[in-house]
Length: 325
Image (cartoon, rainbow, N blue to C red; front, side, top):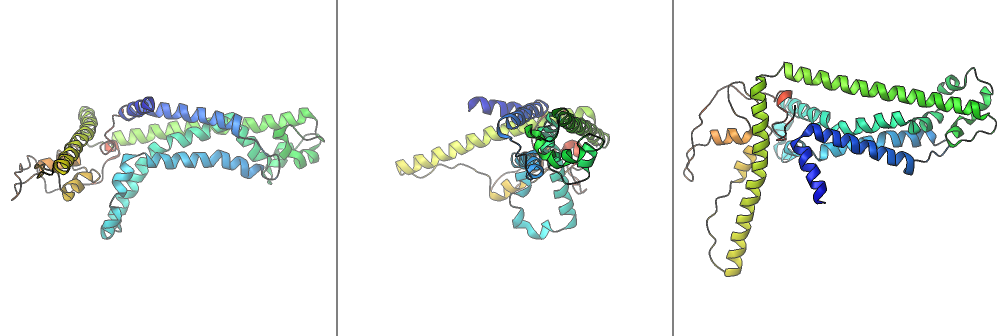
């Protein structure tokens, strides 16, 4: 378990390495499923069975990607308590953009699953051998025993089809595998090209320079790590204070803990402004700390009347606290 946590920590700090690990684990999982679990029924269930093994694990991996994303829960936590703001068009558009940005990362594992499955070809053979379309005519057309080929096509993945010579059956299966692998390489090319285009667009529209972006990413990672350590330390101190007070039956010592409103202010998703030099919601909160009756607060060093705008795609790392290229 400790080794697994170490891998997760490395993946969090180095997302590109994390993506590679996810891709390798997904490919390995597909190979195990394909060789151990997957058994084509060679009946009228071929199409449904192959489709389920091709797409349902990919859907599960996509949902898992959303579940493990910190930004998902930053967006959803407490959202229903602000229903009036939620149904504003601008708010809905911002939520949709955040979900899209999360989805681009979450799509890594399901895309790998589908691509590796297509390159392997087992699922596609089972799926397309059970189809009831003109695809059968395309596979068996121009071959000897064409009628028997179309009639017994669903039995080919199991090595059956007594009315069709083995050579014809093997040629049909080779054609199916070739189609599957062509689709697999096309999918891989599309994923790589889309990733390159999205990265280029995000960098091209970046409102900040390359060096400032590198600094910003380093700051986001450090703040995220320190937030976890500070929160754990403060929680431990508060728990020790309460337990000490309970068992010794003494008045509790004073420990300052942020209020619910303070926590809410630093838990919002980051909003970028070209004139306010804030690197996170925590940075904005600290810089706008004002003097009140209860505490002493520092006035903001940088202020602007310009409203915050949607977070540019190039700054999507801010709420995750990760380093990316």
